[in-house]
Amino acid sequence: MQAEPSKTSDSDLLRAVGRGDEAALAACYDRYRLILFGLILRILNDRAEAEDVLQETFLQVWRRANDFDESRGRAFTWLVTIARSRALDRLRSHGSRARIAAEAAAENRDSVGDATAETLRSEEAVVVHRALVELPEEQRRALLLAYFEGLTQTEIATRLGIPLGTVKTRVRSGMIRLRELLRDQFQGRR
Image (cartoon, rainbow, N blue to C red; front, side, top):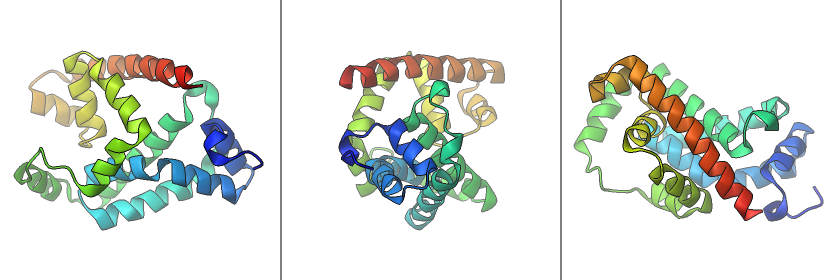
């Protein structure tokens, strides 16, 4: 890559990764490791597991960068989707959902770990947080349960005591609105 990593767009980085550019992968890792680690850690609630899953995420990015299609969404969204999927796969493969849920329930919900604090300070987290605040409460709650607590839509319906169809509608509507808000936020930065 000739451009400095901070000036290179996320889409350009992923295209370079797809061409086998290790420096582009390193730049992508440096740019998103904190926010992705925070997301993974929040789902798994285990630092060592989260570190492993972060590595698996970037291994998948290395292998599948050519699958990224900018017309289907932002590079950041693609990376978050991979990280979340890998974390949920790990959670399910270890059968530790009940243990993690019990630990999370016992833990003070207001406490924030070091990695999460670093993530919240990152620029992307601020933009995402601002966009989430603009969503209606029911959509925001469904998205937080799905993407930050790692619950399935069926589990969300059970926890909230609402029909599964309502959860699906709220998650879908929330994602559409969030995508619009983030597109506006990120386009405003260019």
